[in-house]
Image 1 (spheres, rainbow, N blue to C red):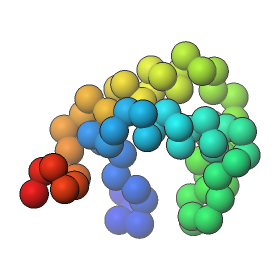
Image 2: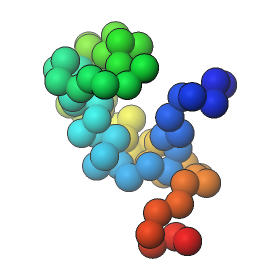
Image 3: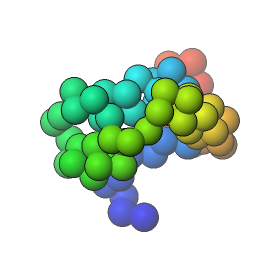
Length: 69
């Protein structure tokens, strides 16, 4: 996978759900992957978004934030 792609495994599920809703609704812009993500999310239902967010949020991560230094 291209290193420029965002790493979503282990990301906060509420952030993922919100982002997918914005992509689906055409309200997210400003990143190189916007068109790709919007085309993938355009037909997702709210339940599918919740399921995807729960799945990716439960994956192992190497992400670090202020709580996991």
